[in-house]
Length: 451
Image (cartoon, rainbow, N blue to C red; front, side, top):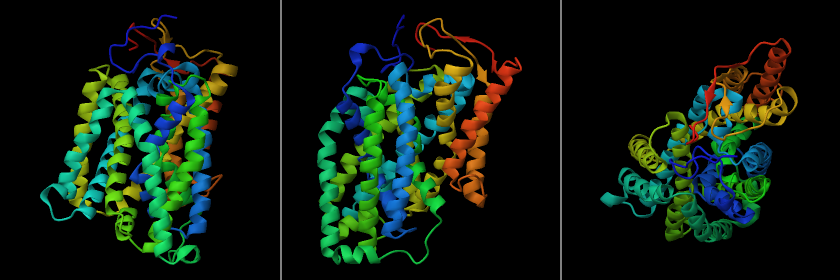
């Protein structure tokens, strides 16, 4: 198979060649670097406003098991084809549909996530070192955002190296913070007794948990395509999300419930770990935000066919930093936009992944019988009509179920959106194929540079 020329950087439009493959441990550490972020324990703080600790564990486990299965299936596709998410979407959505899917999954959300993570970094700096012009939320957002562009600008090798350095130290700080919070605030007996006066519906919490990592879940292929084994990404993803994300949500909720602080950064500062909180913010946000920019850059290259990865890292980083500074100026330290954002992502991003899974594992193997190819000269449709319709309908129904309490099959917005998109796509493709109605419209040929 002809590889083509990597003119955009980090194989943004081409399959990863064998000489660039990485070990399963390397893939795991990159995923762990993404998870090593204040937003994960901040999310636990958000759960503490909705549930007591027992319900937090239940909600976190269900949400993360869903993430583990869903993301693991997508990671395997990347490991098998060596293609990133935006290339993979060309088959279930078509070239134009893939651009729409990439906007929904990554190109726009990851810029927002970069802004969110930079905002959380700025909050940490402001809490620990208040009163200085450079430590206001707005100012910290600006210089913090610039710092976080560095490794994304360099590329995958820098992402992996930073994760190896940061991850062990970051998780050690989390364990210390959690242990200190328990010791100084009445121990585990107190921890199991405290909680909010009103408990939120189970479906809201599960959708919230899934939404927190929804973008990362659907773009697991961006990293798994580098795995030495086809299953490297699936194993690494499942382990890190089910075990470690659940633990981080638990720790964040516990620290907030014990201290009564409105968010986990304040909680850590209150137990005397101000320097630790600062290190958590700097190291955690850096290992996550560089991945956000890196994946966003890959998406924008596939959408626009313009510029290379380094230019897109700078463009998306500047936009995200500006949003973060504006966010800090308007909302300060409020968790409300963060919770709303998580729930919204939980509804609209998963249907894209559901359509991809349905197409790769069922449609391509048993209905139209095709292989995912990305070599120069390969022909791909412009629009896959069932794919685009299923993606949009699934997202809208999931959003309506969560927002208006519609009684759909599961009662959980994120699960409803996945199931509906998955089933609708299979039904539409099977019906149109049976009736000899062409469901893939137009034709586009992959060039030597993968565009």
